[in-house]
Length: 303
Image 1 (cartoon, rainbow, N blue to C red):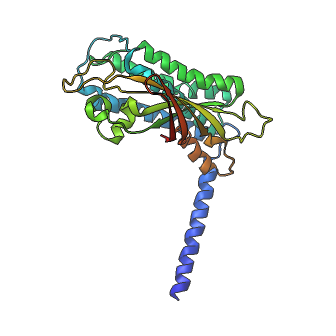
Image 2 (cartoon, rainbow, N blue to C red; image 1 turned 30 degrees about the vertical axis):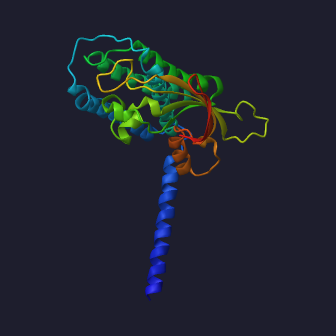
Image 3 (tube, rainbow, N blue to C red; image 1 turned 60 degrees about the vertical axis):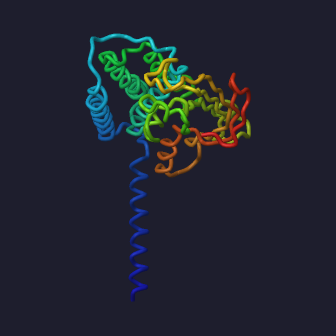
């Protein structure tokens, strides 16, 4: 009797899981025509998330620093431009997500580019205005140019090829520098992931098959060119901590392989969504590093 009950429960769980996955798969499937309830859901969700994020930033971050009159700041020489690449990456990815969400609701390609792909630029512009009214920072035209570059990379490819043949990706590893200046570089993995530029690498991942469609190159195989920097305790040669000796910063250039997860063939829209999310991160692969300090360095696996 117990065995029958156990088998019945297992059968019910399998059936429930299959039905749930089927419904989720149907829900995640992009609409072929305009689906107004979906479009309204996307607009409300994006607006709400953006508003809550900006309010949260204002209360939890900017409120701790004194306000000032609106002013600009030229920070283009800081962090060996790693912060600028962060802006390019963020604007690109936010715009890509915005366009994809509108595509899911069946919105026209034109509206996807106008209202979806520009959401990253619009959001980061508001954040930049916040900086302009903060005494600690300032409105940076360099940041704005980087934001525009990220949005342009997405929009330009959609207009030229109607697909993303080149994708911006991110990778990170912890370094020894954060402990020397945790206020600037973060304290703990969750902060260092966003703040320690020494451990960050930004990649331009290029899909080979999209340029050589008649070749036998796997459709998912990419080559990736990365940029990073090392030896930075602060954005300039000066630090607020007298106990820290500023290291000698240098640029790093990388070459590696990568995988475009969005090009892996599957009929599951659940998997497609998962692949789309994780495609923002560079897949760990062997990599060649080139820099002026150590010459050429080989990494068996690079994060």
